[in-house]
Length: 241
Image 1 (cartoon, rainbow, N blue to C red):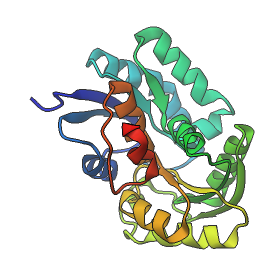
Image 2 (image 1 turned 90 degrees about the vertical axis):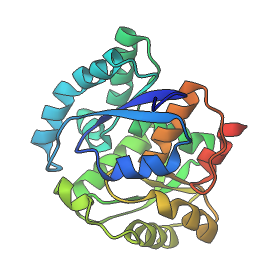
Image 3 (image 1 turned 45 degrees about the horizontal axis):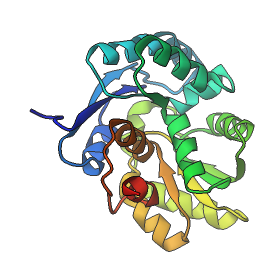
């Protein structure tokens, strides 16, 4: 049986492709992710609003499949819906399921806090409007965004075509232009990032948090799996502590 150590659920904003492959690289043997999707195809307000309206239903579907934890994706969606909307969704789903619940943005913020990062640089695949909304959300949540750079992508399918080196180079450029950055955050689960976490931490000397990595961290913690995962950043290495 797959998932014999535990299974956690993911409400994915878009099709589950890049993040599925990257999650398989991160997770230890015996852990499975079960997924439902909100089918966002374009990173625009109308699709975010539609996705938000069915987000809770997606999470409840994962609960019926007996997921051991639930993680809801969509940083840009929560940024659009307003400060604190991620926590309201978490509280709503948990009150109905009593299953440990998080979102990618809250798991990522918790990971940054766990690593002692307050002043951060953000590297995203998004357009400037989405980037500024994310900046405002994180700063409203107590972080100091000292640098940001995006790729300007608006179609979700184009995220899957981003070269592997792009997230590394984008993060390096943003970091070197910033002052006093203590860490790097790379949102979005559909562009390739996890293979660049360790090189970035080595080359720049600061911790890196990505959505896929933060999802794995929250899911494994919630399942009680304390296995040190090497090669994908300090956050996952701390699991065994």
